[in-house]
Length: 529
Image 1 (cartoon, rainbow, N blue to C red):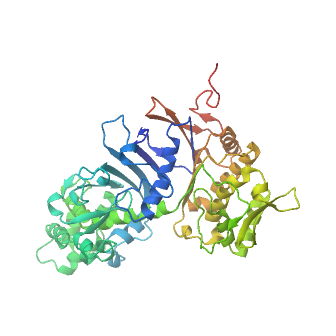
Image 2: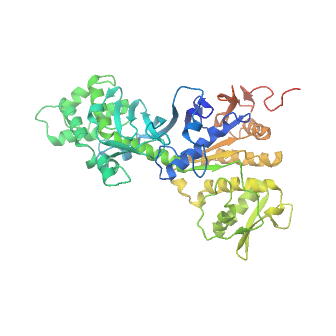
Image 3: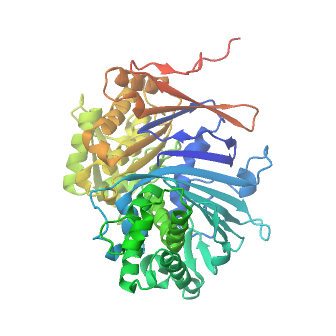
């Protein structure tokens, strides 16, 4: 995710476009909208991990936003909650996953030309009139580079309108529905619903797509070739026209591999503004729109599944934890399963974790087992003994779920599935709770080390931190001044409550000397008597 904008969610009437940097810091007064903004990330995660009846699972295991009527902002006339997401995808990935003819395009495509395409989608969620307890996806807009597709659905999730680059295809769509799978619709045919398929047949098996869409594309192409042109040459033209930006699609229309000279002669005169090109381009997108949307949906689902949330209400330390033979691969938001998670690690992983915590925090961890119970024990470098975590300062128990999750998800040796996709997002509320400023400094140093490492620059680690800690922000500035990270790596989002029900949001930036620009005066000071 590159950026996000939210409308009508609690006090977030309409946020500006907020860039998600490697470190995004959320600050502001109490009840100013910080937590609402941060918790949209675990909201996305729980919405794609459960089998749900609505686009978004507002009440789930990670976060509970309440009923739709409770969370929509009361001060505006707009009766929808809107999310706008910006991201990017590789050209090759789009062709491989969202193009009907990927199995036969190799001779037409330059594999070295792997452009990064910006994508943007807008999801509009609304309450149903028939059943006000339920919500539905009213509209979905997506832009891939300069290609735009707009969808509208009724309360039964049926697609009722489709507009591609300002050309209406409403009269050509029939019996296509959206299943609920997060902000991006999963488009399926009526046959898929009747057969109870959990995926879109148009994504997996192109032959199940509506034949009329393919025939429409052929009909348009045949206008630009002789009547005697062979079916094989026409099929080559179809396979050569590639999905991407308009200029990319246009260049594929002029592919030198094509044998049809009439087509090439006409295509050479086209620009992206030519009506003939627009007709071909839009017909191509129409033929592949289900695969395109479902590919973007899978892309966003993969992102959402790799969001790691740590709540501010972390579990108190216990002297003993009941041993359970569970396979635990993640620490829950409250850190309640930290002991079981540690016990699940292999001997090699435990040793590496011990070395890692020693290097970064001067502490060592281990679990002990006795009479069916687990204990977490910790040793500080100044000590010669391991001590039960219940007998150590409260701050360690609050920090452990965060740092263990960071270690596990960003250590390549763990071979976590996240390294197949190359990104992880951590949404952490108030990591500074019960920590001395010196320990906050150690924690900040760790975050900077993670995002500044060459290895993790490629992995696209994103840290979203809600904090009230002046020490944390100052330490970030010190790292920027020391050139450990660049100012562009950090975004500071300042929340304020204008009138009790509407958040006002400003953005502050660090300069190359580690000083904040656009920072409110006396931000951390109480009001004068």
